[in-house]
Image (cartoon, rainbow, N blue to C red; front, side, top):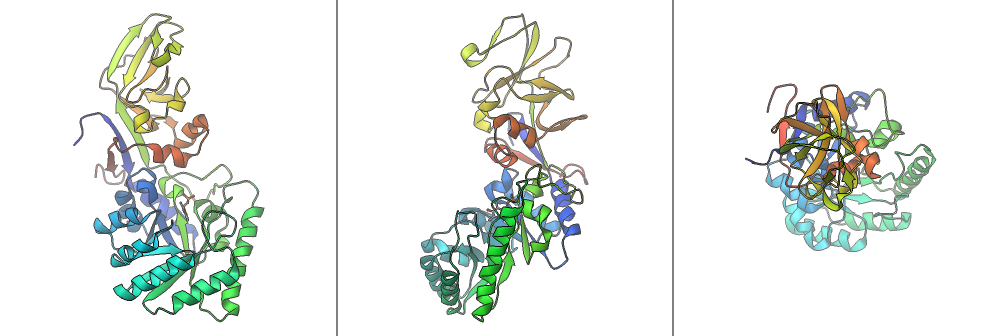
Length: 379
Ligand SMILES: *Cc1c(COP(=O)(O)O)cnc(C)c1O
């Protein structure tokens, strides 16, 4: 139940479609991990996770233990991996809920071993740094040592060994090729030591779109689950994607103003001619970025209307010609398709100097996410 008419519709059929698009091009033995961190890239983690699992994803990945706990508490039973760091003192909370954690240092492996012994269950994925420079073991001998320490504890399963590509969305593939070579050297070292090689995974969306030969056991699909290609360089004609999120609002106020009328803070905009100004109940506190002041557009009556003046915390003005018969209560699309026009997260990202990921995850908590199912009518 919400009173302010500003909301996001999340098309769960689009999520299913995107999972199936990857499913069709991947070998049957490659599993899809749906990455639903940051509340499902702003779409709602639970509804995305359910749709993805329905369509053939078999695992879930999140950034934090808190996100994982939320999904477990909501009743999801699929294998769940925390991709980011988890503090050693909290690993037992993860194992208590059959949540696997990522480990890359001796202290956390020791904590995981103790937690697994106490719980009788524990699962970790070892992370190696092959060029991302974020988290991960950088040295082969260190990997062997951590792995041996984990293997000493029978209750602790080493489910996976993985790394993360830093440049898979860039034009030049050579950095990714180097990262893959580095990943192979870590694996080769385990083989030389006579250690069993855990399930391997390397690819994010961009990697899965471009370097499918390196899919190994799982691919970790994030942004493309939501219908976006990671960049212009990471597109694949055989993986057609459909954006899942539409951000909508309704016109709160309509006024006709003469030329020279100041609009919004700083009076940074003055109407160049007689215009009809619409006030929308959405602002930067909703993730409708202030960087879009005087630059972006919204869709009104299937056409583009420019944002005029500064975006406020909770309200934004747009201008339309006097002959557009727009009424209070009329639906406006902020992100998505209306009629034949479309404003997608890539367009908004270009305006803001960022990427679609940030545009989507900026959409605030104050905006309700409403699931719709384009294949089945309203869910
Ligand atoms: C976020 C993340 C992904 C998903 O990345 P996309 O580019 O959104 O597909 C995969 N793996 C790790 C480790 C991540 O942190």
